[in-house]
Length: 332
Image 1 (cartoon, rainbow, N blue to C red):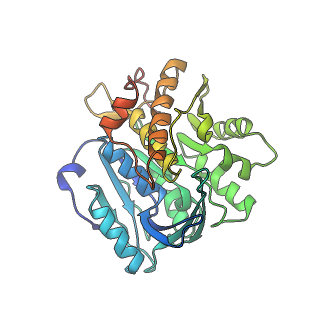
Image 2: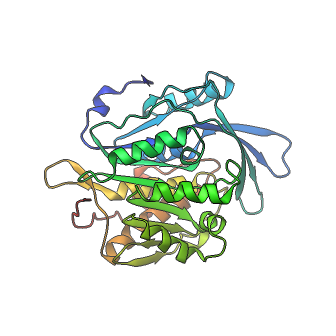
Image 3: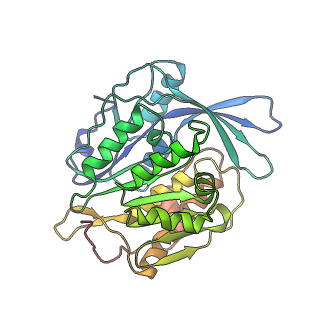
């Protein structure tokens, strides 16, 4: 595995977040425009950038090809300041996504030329939280490597696995196969986030709340259901809490869910009594509400500017009351 660049001092920090998944190039096509703009990103990469901007120690484990889209990805990631590990891949292809943006609503829809084929995904000993999702959990052969990495960390004291489903039927139109992959992953995850659109596609016969509770029954300690402009709901064994989304002027929705996820994960990683950091799963309704409000605010802020631009820590602090970490509860 090649470090690009090797941020040795940052990597030595205790208990960091590791984000695993694809980096890609979005070809953004706005309705009515006569040009397409290439923008490097990818959901896992966006989440890692968001965590970095929020001051969390984070490493992005990803891969890309030695092709023109890959050169754009490499240049972008090098400029983010992220601690970055480029995993060896079986091919030299970089994923390209075509993002269609509706000018009236700012909503984006996607199509993909997908490549996700890391040969291996190691999990460092100082990993407190492993996050993955989107194409990385369903595009083979890499999805099997991701599942193996999640199993390696899941169940270790004070550690956790988080997943953002970010369902993309364009890369796996077989609903039953996609659902099976999601269920396997949920069984080794502590936190699962999904949008109402994700769950409506996976389980069209169920309302999103019921589908979210079904995911919770598979083993996660927290399931978060996002509803776009209608806010978000968190489900735990002890509580169900909903929060509204802040009202903002939307430029587009690209990266909004990733910004939400970054702020959610940042709020869940807090100081352990031994001086390290560990994952805290909020169990009291008021604690879950504070975590969700921070995440919803981050997602709203990201929609106010074009492209995937998650807020900085100062921007988030200025827009919301800082989250007070819930009482420590070790993840068994």
